[in-house]
Length: 588
Image (cartoon, rainbow, N blue to C red; front, side, top):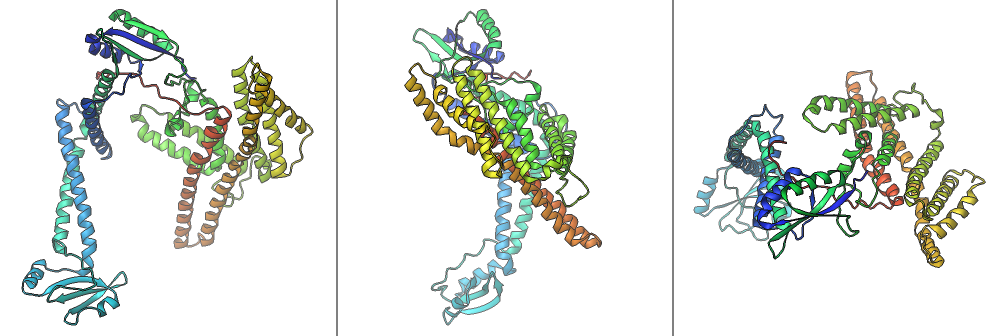
């Protein structure tokens, strides 16, 4: 559910703006709308400082499990020290990579003394270390002395000595600053320095919580400066602060304004206002929040929250796309292990509960279809629903799921349009939608059209043409309806057919699994070596197949909700996240 918002303007004296913003920040309910783009040197400096601090925090988080946390008297000094250490690690790491690259380049040439080469050059003998083709070797000057060392990447390794240092037509390579032995010594020194700094970094991970709190304080300072820069200052010394407040928090905001003796104006947002979206759903619907957050989708304030429908159908799509009880069992066990190890340190455990449910649905679908790590590895497992052994029946089920899914969108829209004549337009789309369902069965599966199909193809377009764009002027209403029908009729058919991807991807998952099963069985398990190879094929093959399944969830399972269903809901995902102005005090 999208929480209703009110547009609130607060009028106060500009000399009190700092205290006012501090009070609004502590209340934390007003999503600010800036009158002008907040910018300035102080804001840029704070943002740059926050980015530097975030890099240090991420480095500490990646350094391993943090030790017991300790308080920090001077967190800014700790940050500066850790930033110096972090930059030192990066510099030494870059030096390690550079030295390793030089060693790989010159190691095939063996050990050589650069001082001796320099002495020879001062005495008129120029030494070149070259990788040449046979034709380039033959084209060397006649007075050049050549010693072949071997081959390198199909070229001849050669030490070439000339008196004038000239090699016409051949591009020489400059010698390194250090000999290979010295390069190896420098590499060890660089690695030791890097390792020492990394150890020092890990030793200071006890201040990770203090640094995170410092980052929150920096965020508060940035938000404060942006609010200060984005306010509207009037000529008479007054200031206007404007934003959007959820209706259930409006009373607290008004009480604050009364205590502070501010003037305020509360009004409904105008159609052109950038109103933020705040969602509030039952706990079972909140399970889908990690998915929507991952794909970064949010409905607009004037759109509709489809989280509940998304959750129900996404769960079904997940089970059908993965489609294997064995894989579902592994997902559940993996989630259980991650929950046990990391869950206690995480405030939001919703992803674990979501994965538990998805793994259960996957196991259920796998049992219905008799799929357990494919269908060949355990031939004794029979499907609980023999009807699903026929691929045509699964295709029919996919079309049915698609028709039901899209019908939900049009029933929803009809409820929203009640009691206008637009309800009849949505009824027309429902007729056409189910007509297209029967047409898909005819064209794809060869199923005969039922007797009511002609009625659907007649009633649907007529209702759409007359009532989908209702207007007092009949001609304008029919014209709008016909345009709507022309643009979306074919799309309705293709949307129904697109749900066959649930069958196709599920079938591919079984086929890939059985391919690896067949390869493993072909090696046999009657000898330790072949048994090991067979087991390795099974493990790697099924892991690879599960990765493909995860990609299919993102490509297909999400798409059917955010494109096919959303298009029938006229949903554009144009939401602005509700981000109320808050200040961090260290007490929260």
